[in-house]
Image 1 (cartoon, rainbow, N blue to C red):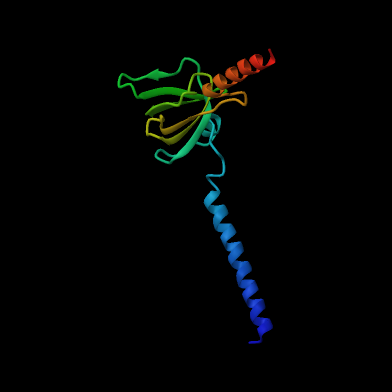
Image 2 (cartoon, rainbow, N blue to C red):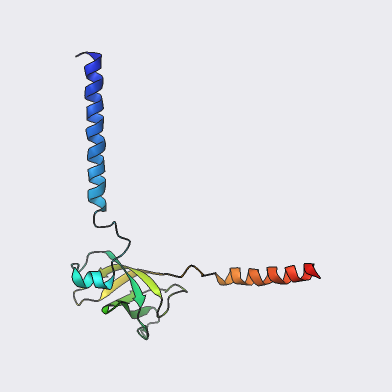
Length: 148
């Protein structure tokens, strides 16, 4: 085979390999492309029990119930009229509270309760950690002192 034909065959093989890798990557990401599923999406298209997903929405007002063991929390994630009961065992993030955003990772049990192994509290763009707020007041005091 001539060197020119060898280069053409190698280029075509490389192109086929790249296209194949792209299709495999897209197939692997097909179900995980969304960051989370909302209660409304799950009501329209339920998932089978035991399959790990991310559930996102707002924590319903007056829905957080702490169990007597001190580490288990039951609450409801809602989006509009759709609601999903969630159970989490562990230490909740500091920002986790009613009427705030949450993303829970876990799976549904056979009774329809979402058993979360991780919960992430979402905050708005104005959030400032308490340590930073304290630093800001110290900076303001220093600035006033320097202005005198």
